[in-house]
Length: 131
Image (cartoon, rainbow, N blue to C red):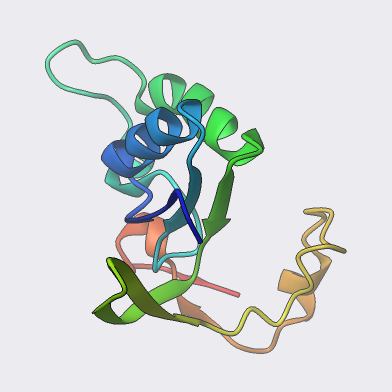
């Protein structure tokens, strides 16, 4: 694909790169191996040195990247292999199983209640469990 860009990591830097590249017409694939975008900043309460609310700063960019027509977000996706090919790169991505149809998800939480498996929760440093 001509004019396509793969950005690995959907933290603050990855989100900003994706928005800038998309603004100039490139189709962007924003890949992150976690279940959500935002990176470490999305987990913080406040930022140093101003004590500003972290998510208050990052949420507008997260919304913009999620709704940009030139950006495709691939969460729960790992980059397995990168090879140079024909003046560009060929990348092998592996998407982790989700067990939930993203197109049908309304965010109601019913699937979490029904799920029999508990896994470490990524947003709290894998201290607690989630379904």
